[in-house]
Length: 209
Image (cartoon, rainbow, N blue to C red; front, side):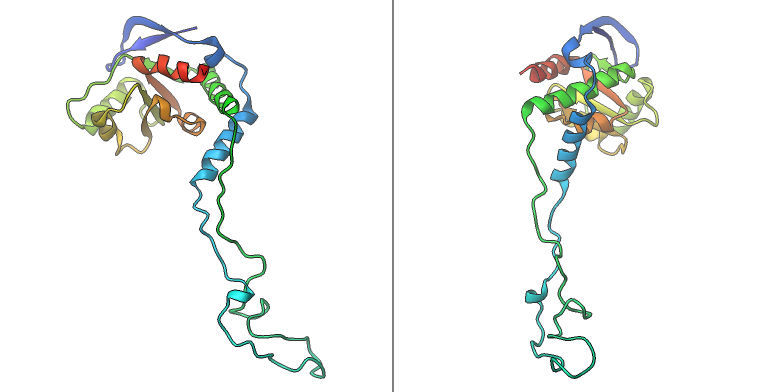
């Protein structure tokens, strides 16, 4: 399985890169993708929600009326959940929503997304991106040259590049990550995926482990 390498002008360079069939050509496992995306989103939750229960309310503990003889329901103190300002029954408490998945399943999820993207012709390989200074306009020109105007795009770099990152930071539909920062959520969320030529082999090596 091969992909053509493009330059920053959107033109073919005449070179190709070899892609591992076991990574980019498998039958997608949708449940594995669902689990990793669910794990990613769960980890984003702060889990700081909290409401006071009856025992945590500061108020009088006096019994509001006598137990019998009033002809109405029995009342305890003003902290009862049935009164405005009273405690909440089974209210939310701070908690950690994160959960674990094994590495094999997470690798399967990434392979599944990449295989689906390959079927959709949504993966490109770029030879290199060299910006002398942060320039958003240059990144917009790059997106346009690759035909990504108005589309969500994910650029995967072999190593951190400050100028490239800063050039893309103000573009709401563009994201730049290094090959070892990628999650299945990033791959699913992107409409188009662009691997830099130096990142593709490193990324494949990570998924073979």
